[in-house]
Length: 293
Image 1: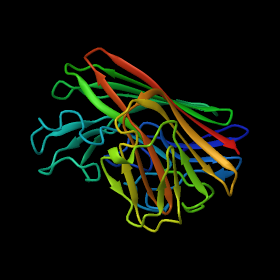
Image 2: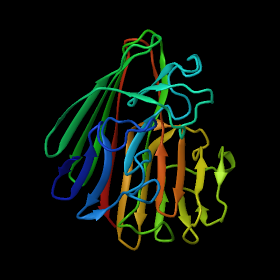
Image 3: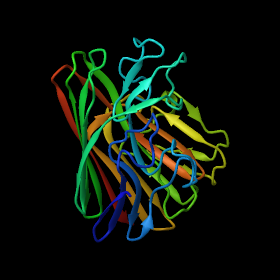
Image 4: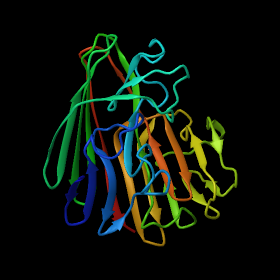
């Protein structure tokens, strides 16, 4: 059973590492499966189907190393490599791709929780000179929640990776469309996007906002929203029909921001670059706030 964190406004369901999603992509440590604000659900599912298979994302799943996990390139086919927060994955003869299904040796986690906070942590095995400790604390605040992270390099080689939360957002089961508006605290630079997927031209790119001409029927995707400029890690999503808004704010700056969406979710992603020499550690946080317009 998931842990329910609850206060007067917020209800958060968090799955234990050994429950539900066991795939090779998303971090198993503190899988936030749903968010409600005053009884209104603000999260959705990657596939749009809550009964979909357990290899897909939901709500506020995060991931380390989406492009290239630790030491993947030097790992022989058939051997194992680290996927931070997941465990060891067995390498196939294909280039790494985050949607591939890899065999997993999961990590062992310790967990403590109360009615408003859960803490999970793990220590990886040493593999080809790489090892780490990971700790995640999810705590309710008055009108939202905060995720605190701790990552320590306990191996012999430098750890270079990134981390982001794949926010699967959907307000009160209302499909993505003209009532939604996504705001950023920086100038959006379409001419510097690495990739643009907007097949129906229903997504409107403004100076610092993203809106919709009409409800999309197909996937949309934009990468490198800030044009590699180092900017405040923040987005704010509002729904004018529901008079509700929600924001994520990191305590770091980012130069990598992506947006993916489909008719049933919109997913802004704030990436954190991580570089840790042996014995170094990094702490960071992400704060989510919900508010009425």
